[in-house]
Image 1 (cartoon, rainbow, N blue to C red):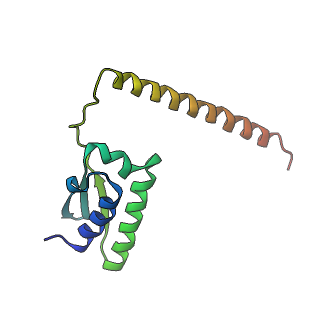
Image 2 (image 1 turned 60 degrees about the horizontal axis):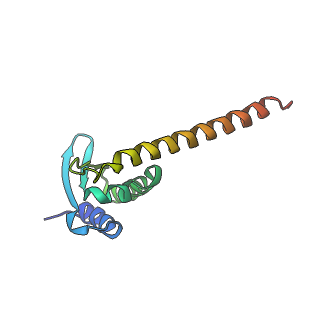
Length: 125
């Protein structure tokens, strides 16, 4: 029998993923509170985490609100299934290209930020 916290997370996650039948939530209690371990289909992990972890953080925020109501501390752990293996030889080169693109994008942002900070240092206040 699942508890209200498991049902809550399960409802949210099943509405986000493409394979709702593969959603599994394990609940453990320890001295730190309640740990909910979320396991989804490997293709859906990105949907649950979201860009820069925004979706996962939103789910954790909602859990924190539920914890406030129930006088409990909830933690959400997204379990990584290593079953996923990219198909074809092009997958590894695609990953490398994505990593290079992200790295160049972040370095451009870093350069822009440094330039803006240098401009702020020049201000006489």
